[in-house]
Image (cartoon, rainbow, N blue to C red; front, top):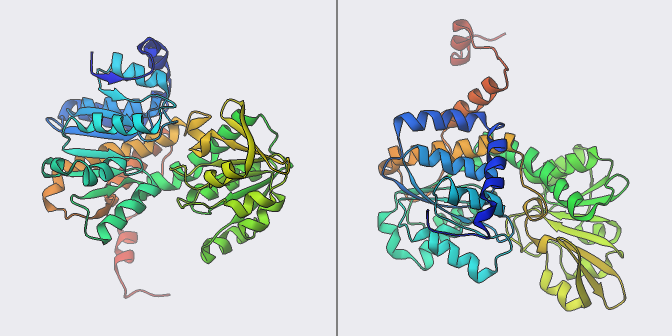
Length: 419
């Protein structure tokens, strides 16, 4: 039995069934696993992963192990772990896993250190907490690390800031920047799973509600699209004029967040920044307003100010905390302000995580083969990997596309021909 710290090993059988269910919708990752099993491109590589411990992640871990990697796994968010999936990884896959849904901050960072005790050659992050911990507390590990990958927007922002300041000590591939990641995972995955989390937590009707979305990146686009599809009146708040213009052209109302705070029924933050919904917003929100976050860290909602303004707080439903303000108005915070799609639901559907985790697997292989050529900065996913994942996904879906003729290829490379 692998070393682990999980909620209950007795959940393993249930978790294994769910992992098998998820695998049915992850054909691209399966094809990579089949190749990895034969070629062993990660043989001898120690890999520490800090990801949401879900059934989809379990399939990625099995793929990496099939490729020869020695894998250790910890959670990238205290509320995102699926305890049955963690148990199955420990019991059946014999992978060291350190993750418990609802773990406190101290346990969360202890688990990160447990995963890093393997002295990894490669780090695989979702939020850059492994990289951050290594660069601040575990600097002795840096010499043995050849590179890493990063899954999410927030993590890429942190890592690019490190690279710009010259403090990043090993190369990172930004998996989040792959077209086959952000165009699908961020937009369709976050869009559906965020709404799913809110509906599961509250059982409130979305249609007819005023749904306020802060941030109109790919995640914000996805949530806006799904909320509109369910019949909500969607308002977008933004600081970027280009994205605000895009939201307007897409048919959404756009206004400052403090104005939206007065009329919103449900609020979702997807910005990657701090205190987006602030004390000024709470002061004017209507009684019964629901506030949720789908960004990586629980910093987008100013929970400290909400707590200070409240005379009473209680958990009224699973993942729903009621804050009663001094004037009697009630504001409902979902999932402790953490990722509502994983805190209150099951995260992204397997079909989109198939592509995201295919990127992770292939980028780990890329790092093994190319790390000596790379500098200590953040790299985009190679176009060849993006294209291959797209090809495999289309093939799995039974979709065929055209190919360029020799004449068309020649035309696209020429400049002589005009009208």
